[in-house]
Length: 295
Image (cartoon, rainbow, N blue to C red; front, side, top):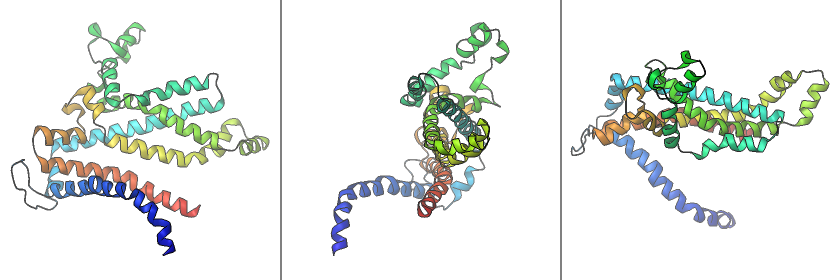
């Protein structure tokens, strides 16, 4: 009875949140999976249970496979590029530069901008117009005598999605920098000094002493960036619209639900997106729980 009095007030306090999350998050996720396992391919049909047929048939579509390849390329470039940029900026901050506070604000400022606004700005910067009508980065390259660097950006069929990751890297680089900077500042100066006293060069101090202690930060950044990239939608639509050349699963799902009016296929794509994100999130949660138990 005493234990009940201890935890009951707290449970009553958070119970509205628990109920709302159960209904509007997990309940709707369950409803989405249920819809994906029906043949409700029009808004007026009843929809009979067909099991995993929709999930299997989707991999037989060329557009779905193309959108997944685009997503993988975008994710790899975005995650790796953002981690490298964020780590490099944090390293510069950790080494001590004048006006650090101002630089931190400048690097973090893009985080305050939505992907829609970022996409609109970068659509102009990465305009693929020919040299005589070049604007944005291509015009800058022409003026600097670096015309060979001008290209079609996101309209290139081979590397377009890699170019599409550049605005995302620009937007999230400052955030990852803040994570790594907190990690750098969390490493005891005594440990660094001990390594220096033992004769270690400065780069060895960072490589063998500091970097190993940044693994939890790097893992957290990887998880955050991974799930952002997998559900990317607004940036793609703002820059290129709903074009096949930059198609990703989120855009495909939107078109199936709201343009093609195919609820079952849209729910199937949404289910796959949820599973893709789970691949990132679940191992992270397991690792976090195990780390807390070890601690």
